[in-house]
Each structure stands twice: as structure tokens, then as C-alpha cells.
Image (tube, rainbow, N blue to C red; front, side, top):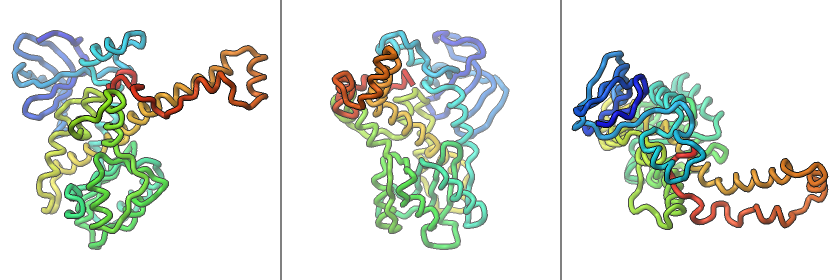
Length: 345
């Protein structure tokens, strides 16, 4: 096993059995790798002990970086991609923050004060992640648990346990709002379930599955042949552990009938909804790439001109030939994106 890490460097190890461990690197040998100050993602358990992992049981290893962009801006695109394979392409502090958000979810079991406090807080945000249990079969199912996430908090509503048999009106109001953007992944069955089983029309939707297909098609010329899960998007964009959300997705196929709900299931559901806003923000950055380039170029016409030229530009208020040249015809030109990998994020 290659020694690619410095002692004390934070790394994430994914195992073939689906477990994921984060820890401080100690040493490697031909047989495996040793780390300490362990965080086991699936259980949430933390320990200062040292763990040894054999090479044959390891699926992937990535290191956490303390700076945005694990590679230099001066290198070529292909070199950046090559250099980035060994790193998680999200700032370490943000990566750790998202883990804390996922772990510190608020579980709402009934329509009490905590419920009304939660929905009041959620209504203050412009973007809300949505993941629901029971919506996988569309109109043939019924939602029993719904998780909503803001950028800083996850709320899990056990609506099957609520006193009323009707879908909570306050949550329905959030879903139907034209002012709050709902972030979903592959949300066709969710929208269908809400519309036909609960008589709720979800509005103002950002679907990260659709965005992913658009971005891949722009980069490669064709849509991906298979649909990515939210976990696979995190792997493809940021080099996240491939096992980070695999067990969470598997939990959706399990029974959610018995109450009280197991803590482990709640943790898995929280992880699924936590990363939706992060993925949406990253996808939006890519989709607005040409727009942002045009904005910078337009502003440079002013800031990089002489004082006389700047005053003239400000006075004429016309679309000059120079301005026309920098304004793209399309919001995102075909082939504008070389890779969906977050090497410049």
C-alpha cells in the first residue's frame, strides 16, 4: 500500500462491507493502514483508539483537505482531475459541518410545540431539502415520515405517529409554497405521491437528478445511461466515500411500520436529506458558469478601463459591440463543462 499521507492527516476509509471510518493517519505497510481518533460514520461512534485496516478489506481511501480546491489553479484540467483522485473535494470544515448537521437532527413525533417551532423555523429559509419515506412507489404509496433540511438543521417528522390522519397542513404549506425552493433528488415519485395520495402540489422544485443529467450531457454530449443516487452524485462531484449513503438508501426498502422508530433509521434518513442543498449549490455553480464569466467580463470593461473610458461607458447606457461580444447566447453553452468533478470548487 502506497504511503500517500502525512502523519496526523485526516483520512476517510471506505470498506468493502459498507462501513466508513474517518481518522488521523498513523502509518501504512504492505498489509494495510493504521489510523486513530476514529469516527465510524454508520453508528456515529467516536473513539480515540487506534484501528488497523487490512488492504484486502479497503475499498477506497481519501484525505480531507483544509483548503478549497485540493489542487493548484495553475495546472491543467486533466492534471487537476488526476491530482484530485486522492482527496475529498470539499473543504474540510464544510465536510465536518455537514456531518454534524446530519448527526444532530431534530425528531418530531407529534404536533406539539417542537413541531410548530420547527415549521416556523423552516419557513424562514429560501431552500429546503426534502426526502420522504413511503413515496418510492408514487401514488401507490403514502408518506409516513418526511425529512426537511435547511443549510444548518435537519428535521424529521414522523407524520404516521401524529394524532391527525391528514397530512400536516403546515408542512403542506411549505411544500406548496412558490417562495421556498424544495430540493429533491429524483423527485418524480415524491411529487406523484404528494399529488395523488395526499392532494398536495409541490411547487418551486429543484431536482438534483435532472440537473445532474443536464450537466453530464453538457460535458459528454449525452445523458448518463443510468440514474445516479444522491450518494453517487457526492462520489462523482466530491470524491465522497461510496459507502457514505449506501446503507441509508438501503434503509428505505426496510419496514418503517413499527413505532418507535429505530435511532439508526433516523440517522440514515438524516444523512440522505443533509447533502441535498450542497449538491444543489454546486450544480448551480456549474450551470451558471458562463453567466458568471459574462458578469466578470462586463465588470472588467469598467474596472480595467481608463477613467475617460469608464465615464463614457457609464454615460451611454448602450449595448456596445464589446458588451455584445461577452454576452453568451445561451445560459450554458454546449460543451462548456469539461467535467462535473469539483476540482475548482
